[in-house]
Image (tube, rainbow, N blue to C red; front, top):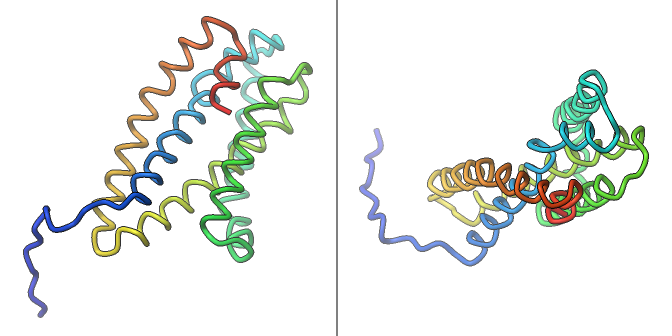
Length: 177
Protein backbone atom coordinates (compact mmCIF):
# COMPACT_ATOMS: atom_id res chain seq x y z
CA UNK A 1 0.00 0.00 0.00
CA UNK A 2 1.36 3.39 -0.91
CA UNK A 3 1.58 6.21 1.58
CA UNK A 4 -0.27 9.42 0.93
CA UNK A 5 1.74 12.58 1.42
CA UNK A 6 0.25 15.75 2.78
CA UNK A 7 0.31 18.47 0.18
CA UNK A 8 0.97 22.00 1.29
CA UNK A 9 -1.51 24.18 -0.58
CA UNK A 10 1.04 26.98 -0.70
CA UNK A 11 3.67 24.91 -2.52
CA UNK A 12 2.08 25.34 -5.93
CA UNK A 13 1.50 28.52 -7.88
CA UNK A 14 -0.70 28.87 -10.92
CA UNK A 15 1.08 29.69 -14.14
CA UNK A 16 0.21 32.41 -16.62
CA UNK A 17 -0.93 29.70 -19.00
CA UNK A 18 -3.47 28.40 -16.49
CA UNK A 19 -4.77 31.91 -15.78
CA UNK A 20 -5.07 32.50 -19.53
CA UNK A 21 -6.89 29.21 -20.13
CA UNK A 22 -9.30 29.91 -17.27
CA UNK A 23 -9.95 33.34 -18.77
CA UNK A 24 -10.63 31.78 -22.19
CA UNK A 25 -13.00 29.32 -20.52
CA UNK A 26 -14.87 32.17 -18.83
CA UNK A 27 -15.13 34.25 -22.01
CA UNK A 28 -16.24 31.27 -24.13
CA UNK A 29 -18.90 30.37 -21.56
CA UNK A 30 -20.17 33.94 -21.36
CA UNK A 31 -20.17 34.20 -25.16
CA UNK A 32 -22.01 30.92 -25.59
CA UNK A 33 -24.60 32.03 -23.05
CA UNK A 34 -25.83 34.50 -25.67
CA UNK A 35 -27.10 31.47 -27.55
CA UNK A 36 -28.30 29.56 -24.51
CA UNK A 37 -29.97 32.50 -22.84
CA UNK A 38 -31.14 34.65 -25.69
CA UNK A 39 -31.63 32.76 -28.93
CA UNK A 40 -35.26 31.81 -28.32
CA UNK A 41 -36.29 35.42 -27.79
CA UNK A 42 -34.00 36.61 -30.59
CA UNK A 43 -35.45 34.25 -33.21
CA UNK A 44 -38.99 35.01 -32.06
CA UNK A 45 -38.42 38.78 -32.27
CA UNK A 46 -36.30 38.93 -35.43
CA UNK A 47 -37.72 36.08 -37.53
CA UNK A 48 -41.12 35.56 -35.88
CA UNK A 49 -40.26 31.95 -35.06
CA UNK A 50 -42.97 30.14 -33.14
CA UNK A 51 -42.26 27.57 -30.44
CA UNK A 52 -41.90 24.76 -32.99
CA UNK A 53 -39.33 26.61 -35.09
CA UNK A 54 -37.36 27.57 -31.99
CA UNK A 55 -37.45 23.94 -30.92
CA UNK A 56 -36.21 22.77 -34.32
CA UNK A 57 -33.30 25.21 -34.22
CA UNK A 58 -32.33 24.05 -30.72
CA UNK A 59 -32.73 20.42 -31.83
CA UNK A 60 -30.23 21.20 -34.60
CA UNK A 61 -27.78 22.36 -31.93
CA UNK A 62 -28.35 19.20 -29.89
CA UNK A 63 -28.06 16.79 -32.80
CA UNK A 64 -24.90 18.49 -34.05
CA UNK A 65 -23.43 18.34 -30.57
CA UNK A 66 -24.16 14.60 -30.24
CA UNK A 67 -22.74 13.77 -33.67
CA UNK A 68 -19.63 15.93 -33.26
CA UNK A 69 -18.73 15.09 -29.68
CA UNK A 70 -19.85 11.48 -29.93
CA UNK A 71 -18.35 10.51 -33.24
CA UNK A 72 -16.37 13.17 -35.11
CA UNK A 73 -14.22 15.00 -32.55
CA UNK A 74 -11.79 12.08 -32.30
CA UNK A 75 -10.97 12.47 -36.00
CA UNK A 76 -10.48 16.21 -35.66
CA UNK A 77 -8.30 15.57 -32.60
CA UNK A 78 -6.17 13.15 -34.65
CA UNK A 79 -5.40 16.00 -37.06
CA UNK A 80 -5.13 18.96 -34.67
CA UNK A 81 -3.35 19.31 -31.33
CA UNK A 82 -5.12 20.96 -28.38
CA UNK A 83 -4.02 24.56 -29.03
CA UNK A 84 -5.02 24.39 -32.69
CA UNK A 85 -8.29 22.70 -31.84
CA UNK A 86 -9.04 25.44 -29.31
CA UNK A 87 -8.26 28.14 -31.89
CA UNK A 88 -10.48 26.37 -34.42
CA UNK A 89 -13.30 26.20 -31.87
CA UNK A 90 -12.96 29.86 -30.92
CA UNK A 91 -12.92 30.80 -34.61
CA UNK A 92 -16.07 28.78 -35.29
CA UNK A 93 -17.78 30.37 -32.30
CA UNK A 94 -16.83 33.92 -33.39
CA UNK A 95 -17.96 33.26 -36.97
CA UNK A 96 -21.19 31.66 -35.77
CA UNK A 97 -22.04 34.49 -33.38
CA UNK A 98 -21.25 37.12 -36.03
CA UNK A 99 -23.35 35.37 -38.67
CA UNK A 100 -26.17 34.90 -36.16
CA UNK A 101 -26.25 38.65 -35.43
CA UNK A 102 -25.91 39.64 -39.07
CA UNK A 103 -28.34 37.08 -40.54
CA UNK A 104 -31.29 38.72 -42.31
CA UNK A 105 -33.10 35.49 -43.30
CA UNK A 106 -34.88 33.14 -40.88
CA UNK A 107 -34.03 29.82 -42.52
CA UNK A 108 -30.30 30.65 -42.35
CA UNK A 109 -30.53 30.18 -38.57
CA UNK A 110 -30.40 26.42 -39.12
CA UNK A 111 -27.00 26.15 -40.84
CA UNK A 112 -25.57 28.91 -38.64
CA UNK A 113 -26.45 27.21 -35.33
CA UNK A 114 -24.39 24.20 -36.38
CA UNK A 115 -21.28 26.30 -35.75
CA UNK A 116 -22.02 26.70 -32.01
CA UNK A 117 -21.71 23.05 -30.91
CA UNK A 118 -18.76 22.58 -33.26
CA UNK A 119 -17.02 25.53 -31.63
CA UNK A 120 -17.82 24.72 -28.00
CA UNK A 121 -17.28 21.00 -28.65
CA UNK A 122 -13.75 21.83 -29.76
CA UNK A 123 -12.97 24.50 -27.16
CA UNK A 124 -13.94 22.74 -23.95
CA UNK A 125 -12.15 19.38 -24.39
CA UNK A 126 -9.04 21.21 -25.59
CA UNK A 127 -9.15 23.58 -22.62
CA UNK A 128 -9.53 20.67 -20.22
CA UNK A 129 -6.60 18.81 -21.75
CA UNK A 130 -4.38 21.89 -21.70
CA UNK A 131 -5.34 22.73 -18.12
CA UNK A 132 -4.67 19.17 -16.95
CA UNK A 133 -1.32 19.13 -18.72
CA UNK A 134 -0.21 22.47 -17.30
CA UNK A 135 -1.46 21.69 -13.78
CA UNK A 136 0.36 18.37 -13.48
CA UNK A 137 -0.35 16.72 -10.13
CA UNK A 138 -2.66 19.62 -9.24
CA UNK A 139 -5.00 18.88 -12.13
CA UNK A 140 -7.94 18.14 -9.86
CA UNK A 141 -7.67 21.54 -8.24
CA UNK A 142 -7.41 23.32 -11.58
CA UNK A 143 -10.28 21.34 -13.09
CA UNK A 144 -12.37 22.37 -10.10
CA UNK A 145 -11.41 25.99 -10.76
CA UNK A 146 -12.43 25.57 -14.40
CA UNK A 147 -15.81 24.20 -13.34
CA UNK A 148 -16.25 27.20 -11.04
CA UNK A 149 -15.26 29.59 -13.81
CA UNK A 150 -17.81 27.93 -16.09
CA UNK A 151 -20.49 28.29 -13.42
CA UNK A 152 -19.73 31.98 -13.00
CA UNK A 153 -19.90 32.43 -16.78
CA UNK A 154 -23.21 30.58 -16.84
CA UNK A 155 -24.62 32.97 -14.24
CA UNK A 156 -23.12 36.24 -15.47
CA UNK A 157 -23.56 35.53 -19.19
CA UNK A 158 -27.37 35.53 -19.34
CA UNK A 159 -27.51 38.70 -17.23
CA UNK A 160 -25.15 40.46 -19.65
CA UNK A 161 -27.16 39.10 -22.59
CA UNK A 162 -30.37 40.53 -21.11
CA UNK A 163 -28.82 43.96 -20.57
CA UNK A 164 -27.37 44.06 -24.08
CA UNK A 165 -30.60 42.78 -25.64
CA UNK A 166 -32.47 45.68 -24.06
CA UNK A 167 -30.32 48.08 -26.11
CA UNK A 168 -30.47 46.20 -29.40
CA UNK A 169 -31.48 42.61 -30.15
CA UNK A 170 -28.31 41.84 -32.12
CA UNK A 171 -25.91 43.40 -29.60
CA UNK A 172 -25.43 40.29 -27.38
CA UNK A 173 -24.20 38.30 -30.39
CA UNK A 174 -21.87 41.02 -31.69
CA UNK A 175 -20.37 41.52 -28.21
CA UNK A 176 -20.08 37.77 -27.67
CA UNK A 177 -18.33 37.34 -31.03
